[in-house]
Length: 227
Image 1 (cartoon, rainbow, N blue to C red):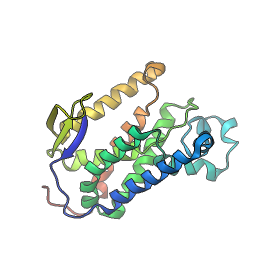
Image 2: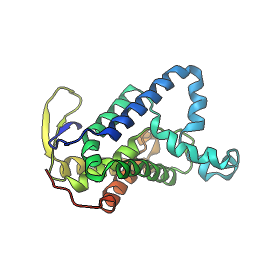
Image 3: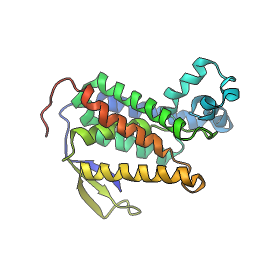
Image 4: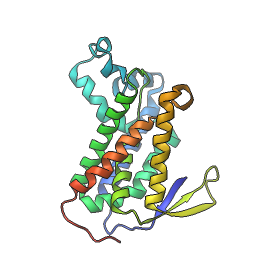
């Protein structure tokens, strides 16, 4: 299922969420201009597990070059569907979390969630030499926070493959819970049969979601009225 909208309307404009979406869009348009140089850029800027788990490979990079991909990989995407899907989900769930936590804590949650998601991917795929890109782990952290703060919000979702319907309306706790179970199940199967379930950083999604759900309560400094 793909979310179309939620039932909670934020009272302020989500400046940080909007800025993140614009930044991701600008970087994606930059990717499109690279042509044959894109592969070289991905090697430098994406998360590649063997760069961190294989000593001989890690020795080829400076500490700064090893740290940089944890940030840059969150702004790279593999295609129009990849970036549109991530940014749409961020727009739906991010505005409420930004309002709840405040802009700085929300931004910290986003980037730390992406960082934890990358670590989770490296830990569960230590021998992979495939570049991993996308904001999915960071977005998953925002979804995890939404799961914690607004479990009874209503989420309208479309049932694939029909983008324009039919639609269903579910409590956020059920919609996001089902999404999490799917990521966990697919991640578990990818460990057993990697060729059949490869291509998606399932465990990055799991790690980001759990981080968001757990740390969101700590990040909130004062209670906000639930809608």
